[in-house]
Length: 121
Length: 106
Image 1: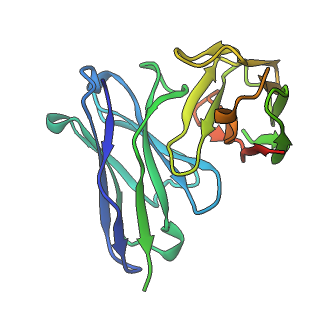
Image 2: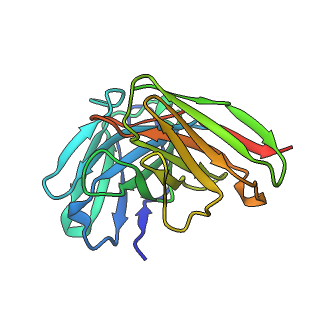
Image 3: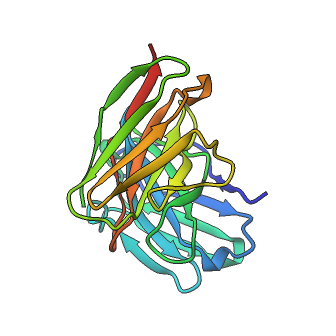
C-alpha cells in the first residue's frame, strides 16, 4: 500500500530554521505532484504549494510565496518543506498530500499523517 | 478564488439527510472536491470533479452543482459520518479550501 510518511513533531524557537520531510513508497513518485497543506490549531486547511519531482517544478500559494521553500530528493522519494526563520505564527500541523492525477491542479487522494511544528520562545 | 462554505456547523441525528454547500467567488467548472476530517486524523478524499465518488467511499455521499455553487449530501447519516467536511477548488493555477463545516450529533 502506498503511503506518505512524514517526519516527527518539532519544537523550535523564533528565528530558527527547520526542514520537515515526507517520504513516499509510490512507485511513480516522479510523475505525481506533492503538496504541503497547513492546518493551524483549531482551524481549516490552507494549501501552501506543490512540487513535481520529475523536474522540480514548484508552485506556491501567494500566501506562502517567499515564506517557505519546497524541495525534493528524488533518490530517496522524499519532499521537503523548509523555513529559514520561523515565527510563532508558523505553529501548526503540516500535511503533505499527493495529487490524484499527474496534472496540476487537482484533488488530493493521499495524505501523510501530519507533522506538528511548534514555535515558541 | 475564494470558497465560502455553509453552514459552518450543523447538528443532525443518525439517519438524517444533510447537505453542505460551497460557493466559489467565480465559476470553477466542476473542479471541486470534498474531504472528511476526523479529530486527530488527516483529511480523506470523498468526491472530486464535483460528483465523482472516490473508490471505497460509501454511496450515501453524493455531490452536485455547477458554476459557482456546489453541494455535498449525505443521504442517511451513520455514526462514523460525524466529522468536519471541507470543499476544495482546483481550477486555474491555485488551490483553495473552504473554511469547513463541523457536523455533530444532535
